[in-house]
Image 1 (tube, rainbow, N blue to C red):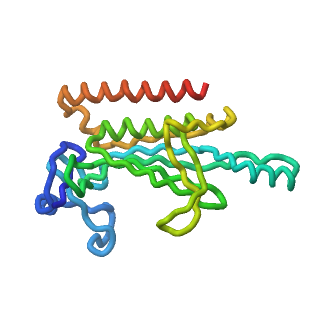
Image 2: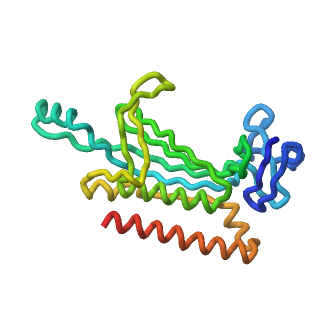
Image 3: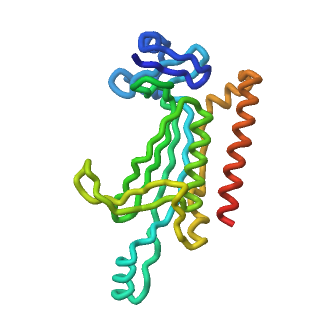
Length: 233
């Protein structure tokens, strides 16, 4: 059974209850919603599903030092070693709103994923992790930023059994520590944007317990940021 969780007040609706909620147009000036963008449900608290959902984005560049054989070929051909390849990376953490727990266990309403992209070729990342609550999702998002900024990743060329071909693959692990020139770390995951418009509008309506939990979460995030900054120094 589908379970939809309001990102504002936290009420969980089953499919029938969700369908019975009031609706608004997804695009306000859409002349024909039934043919174009349609409608979305609105919780009594004012939260518009899909339109007001919380998310975090972090974007930046990491670097991939090619293999010794590629370096040797480049040195023989061009008289110098090649520079590390730039790889654009996006970290996405979102409120799914719909429970994605398809088996027994705690509900899963949040998800983090990593999307790498390099010029002149593709690179895969199968990282995907889901969470029950927003705090766990926020902590994991900042942990992923720390892993990439501190070089705790590994990029390998290996056989993909599913697609039946060799692919470049990005893996994260606290055990990895890339030997990368210090300058390359300065640009990694340099920007971050948090969009939580509805949550900001509803901040004054939170309970004291919720505000206290939020303050504790901020301390954890600040601690992770300080660790990442120390790594760069």
